[in-house]
Length: 162
Image 1 (cartoon, rainbow, N blue to C red):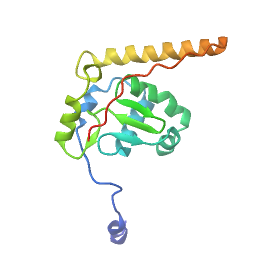
Image 2 (image 1 turned 90 degrees about the vertical axis):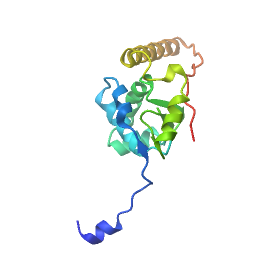
Image 3 (image 1 turned 135 degrees about the vertical axis):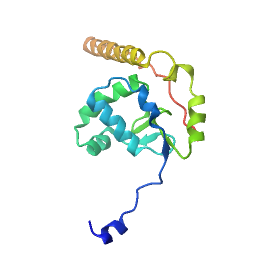
């Protein structure tokens, strides 16, 4: 690398503060889900909002879109990612980056008890939630095969803290 190239490099965004202590609450995830989480952590805005479609996430990881679609439910079941809407995901405050540590502390304190990762056994909770996801997926596939379609239930969502 020449010095001229080094001088031209400009970071994409301001440096954010984040605590890697939250990674202690990451359950045994499939490798693709773990890679997706780390990639989302690099693409987040302050406060943990990730604005990217599955296609964009797949491109960033050099994966197929279907791999992202199969990995995302693991992150949601682990409560590390909340789907806000199509193309918008909210990282859990313990793995999100903020402008300063006080913002992260406020965000963690504002969490409802059922979204706290340090309450109960996060590994058991992940497995329970993922099994619920798989049961719901099987129920929908069965209903679709029969021609019966039922409404989707909405999970608890994280609120963005400024």
